[in-house]
Length: 502
Image 1 (spheres, rainbow, N blue to C red):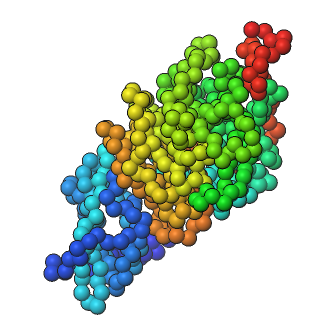
Image 2 (image 1 turned 180 degrees about the vertical axis):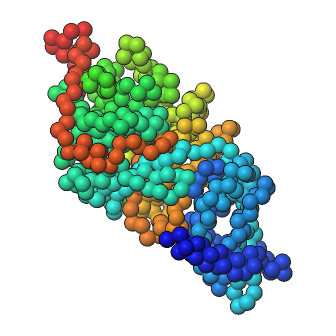
């Protein structure tokens, strides 16, 4: 086998140097940058990202690409194909040697025996790495859930593996995967319909629980792990799906009732939250990195079936005492009535400086909404603003890297139909740089791969539970959870439980 590999490498080397490894200095200059797909022009990239393979959208007989930076390690390719696949090892060495430097990508084309070169593309190599893995849900079509996968991608190369595939569990619906502090060892995953329950993974151990109790609206839904790894904040919801003919928004996910509860993983116990079990709709929780605050969105009580079409959520937070497991008074940070907009998916940066959230006209389920944009809320000042990385399409669900220098978000900007994961760099001044789509081994994949990437979550490593063990856990009967009646509150109504022991 080794001689065959050596022969392939030798032939490939001949192809790469077939135009002497460089363009003629007499080649004419085109006064523009080349058109490439994906658009990796003028972006800031992590020092540990996989090669940014791209497709040159210029007709020619031959293509020349040179990738270089300040500290050496030049990469040169010359070929007849416009598909540029960058050697991974050489790319990694180039980035490591030039962290913090400008990356220069020079492109030339040869037609009718003459070379022409474009103005070079200049990107920036950030010194700070991004978390090594991205976990996401792969969903075929628009809302079709019968072919669903939870996958994980190594961002330093192109290896994608599966955490869970619902084809192995009678097409059970999987949603809302979540991690504790980007830790690949602590994960939760909800299963709906067949084999319903919540999967809790801790290292290589996994269990399945039923978080629905007689005192709660539903099983746990939207999830946020407390930094201590023991508590999970869940929303409990009564949701619906409506179809509409509004331009740019044909699907509306309704939220008629919702509250927040805590789940104690070690005690297998639901803990009600009196200040968060009201007639208002409290939803999509997220902990601060120190665990002292729980952020969430909140709307008033549902008054009619038409409420979904003008419902707006405010951004709120509530203090939390870990010792007594109690919450304080709710504070509204951005009032939806004041801004005449609706807020969703608040995610606090690990350094505690910013809240990254979505804002749109109404509702909270922003993935179907072209008017959804990303915003920063500066916790120290209370100021908030839209991000420069927003597009004319839906920019939605997001998560932070552990160092707070990167975040990933879902966007439909490529075709207004399929969501793709985009990464953006946040510098020390809080400026967000031009985002770039997750690189693929085949740069044309996004043109033909008719699958949505949903709920992208950055994590620091590969999930330890095997796909087979995850499947077996889904097929198990769920353990029933207890309900802490010492809090004396019914999580579904907010009413005092008769006979409870305070």
